[in-house]
Amino acid sequence: MTRLVVVSNRVASPTETKGSAGGLAVGVFGALKDSGGVWFGWSGDVVSDSVANQGPKLEQDGAVTFATVGLPKKDYDQYYRGFSNATLWPVFHYRNDLAVYDREEYAGYRRVNSWLAHRAIKLLQPDDVIWVHDYHLIPFGEALRSEGVTNRMGFFLHIPFPSPQILLNIPPHAELVKSLCCYDVVGFQTPGDQAAFHDYIVRHAHGTATADGEVEAFGRRLKTGVYRIGIFPDEIAEQATRGEARQDVMDLKQSLEGRKLIMSVDRLDYSKGLVERFKAFEHFLEKSPEWRGNVTLVQIAPPTRSDVDTYQQIRHNLEYEAGRINGRYSGLDYTPIRYMNQRYDRWKLMSLFRESQIGLVTPLRDGMNLVAKEYVAAQNPDDPGVLVLSQFAGAADEMKGALMVNPHDIVGMSEAIGRALSMPLAERRERYETSMVMLRKYDLGVWRDSFLADLRGVNLNKQPNKRPAGNK
Image (cartoon, rainbow, N blue to C red; front, side, top):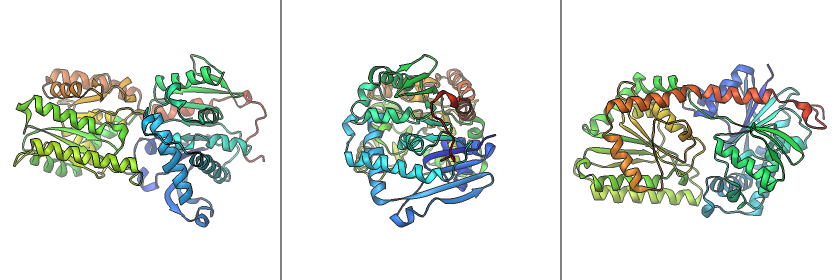
């Protein structure tokens, strides 16, 4: 089997891939172990120019080579804090009001992608299959092509792809889509994301897109597809019942004194709808006085991009709302919202999911949202909790057993909380089983293997003037 080269903005360490890593790390590391290969990307460190230019730091774990580089401060500011997270992230999540475009940051974004490609090319072999991940690295494949690399290259977008009307708000939108067309396979989370990309190709790139995913534009042909990133449900269930987690969970249950538990876990991000969620819970307590003192919302929101002003404001807003609501409804022995701005081990979260009566997952927009899937997989099949899920999460296409809500509808979310808390056991079991069917059908292995099968099946002769890496 040919080697696999995975390229992502951040690279999980060998220790992380065996511990608390998320879906991307678990999925791609499994593929790398099977075929052997390289995982290349940013280490997460901001370093001096001289250190950055020393070349990738290599760490071996069996057949997998972890290759990481640091970024100088200017590159970090322009590539990561700037265009990636101040422009692409908000626009791709339909928040044009929060997007900031700066030409120098865009130039830095493309420069860093070219610099990363130049570093990676020295690690490539002629038959390697290259799998690039997410919005930080859209131009990475184009940069490799400009260096003469003709290997099979695929790109998977983990976040939503916006409709053309939204994407047009980014001035260099055409350059970004042209860069995507330099890959042989481009994967999306949902049919809606794929349709938005096809719509742009036809209406704005004067290209063609067929129902089976074949695209031709900017002088290239490529395949697009829907690959639903998933989880391994049985592993999640095992983590949820792991013995070492039980004491922590029992301590929480004891502190709740028999109250019902609602669990929410999100990165601290404006796309997650956290303030709207708090207001929905407040509305529920206001309209359902019988539940005051009898239900607690635990919101775990680890900090993210804490050096970006927008994210600092989100944290302040959320802390204010939690304090205001708790001030209104707390008692001497009751705190309605427990808000924790910190990280927890993965197995501990799964156990907390299992002990809760509701999983409240209400992003304003999300590519997939694996927390929704993890919540369902962690449940006790004999007495499962209820998933309340935003219709704007990619997971909504699969989690048909969830109570679907519009996260902009405060009253609707409040009513869903009430319905979930009073739902009969038979209905809860039926909804759980319905969702579990889809979790098993589209597990993490299916996502990984179906994408790589399509990528390895690419006919390299379909593009003109092709030659493999290493023949420069």
